[in-house]
Length: 360
Ligand SMILES: Cc1ncc(COP(=O)(O)O)c(C=O)c1O
Image (cartoon, rainbow, N blue to C red; front, side, top):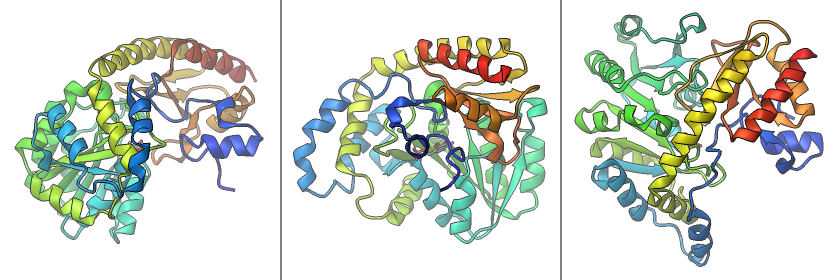
């Protein structure tokens, strides 16, 4: 079988390999809203059951209208998809011929999508030594070669947690436009710091598409839902590339119900912000661990002394806790792991289990 620690959120495979049910594991490897789906989603999904005898609405008109209200743009600015992963695989088909440049450490699907589209990829490697800061001049140095028709950038970075401000993203977009590079901005986790989202920028300038996931903040990764925001012409081309009916009826109603509850985003941000501070402090207190600052619902941790991440993962699994070994991320190695920010009691369990695992 494939290494079950290779990606976050492989709870089914790991549970199977241990002869457990997924419910017996505490999953810190995928970064999902600890509040679970928004109120009203369960009822909306149950109520839509009888609609399963019809094909889904391929325009997702209700969901796009809800997204339009949320972002203050017309529905033509949105293309919904079966998770933002579907969009990651579609965007390379839109750009002019050329190589892709990926800001690293990256989500591994960017390189796979470029390869599937027959494009070569290079990396702009950010360094843990300076907290994964992205320097505009080094980006410009790479884009100046004229080789790159696409740039993949994730904000906030995953797994780094590092946030680029909206003004910083605006400068990156200006640079891309000057160099003729199409910007694919992955905002899968920006809901945790929505004020820095570049959706409004995408509405002002062409040459960018913003990818948003609804699976993390709205806690429905098993249903799959994401969307792209961009100029209506770009969106129409993207939508034309999709498989028919890729967004099922239950995902569409779950999306609409998720957006309907206006207090859930605020409650989520408050809980995650408070628990992130507490968890980071607890991690920093453990010998040999050094957490990076994060704007999202996960924390990247460097092991400065002690077992490597793989050994730590194995030891934590004995306590039925799953964390993300980051050695498979380009630019990171066996000294790094990532944990999701969950609810208070769960985070305490993680800290206690980590303390034991570090002791051997
Ligand atoms: C940075 C990033 N982008 C995109 C995705 C894809 O999310 P989804 O397809 O569930 O919307 C993930 C999933 O882990 C991710 O980490």
